[in-house]
Length: 216
Image (cartoon, rainbow, N blue to C red; front, side):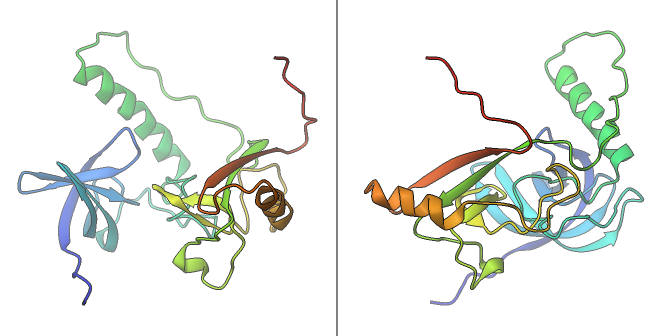
């Protein structure tokens, strides 16, 4: 059976949703575009439709935003973590403020003037904890074909898929080129418990801080 050809639309992106996706309209249909920036004109390939939701990814950019930058991480674009790396930091702050204003306006909530978002002094290395997803059947992202680690981060909204993360610039500086992950040791332990092989698990690792047991 041949694969169904995906539909492509030319979209003028006008605003941004609270989930971080820029969107525009094709006729009366709202199209959410991953990796887009408001005021851009793009060709987007429709990949997801559910009820009234239509989402896609950029195939080409006809008019780029001045705020568009080259992401600093190789996993940007399909990692489920940083979805605004294609936008410079000052623009990120402006759009975060606008998302809040849009939400308040939507529900007719009156507030004093909204201040600007306070900028962080760190753009990288500001987290000390990472949560990895893994499964023992090694379902991995197609872009990582041939690497069957079975542990890493989720791919965007695909909660049943992981990829073998090579680097993460959110972890303490200097950014690790090889993120420490107890890959096969963890999977061996899971196997010894006779749990379903298609089940997904989460492992939280804290960097630079001792684990403190919680009292029950």
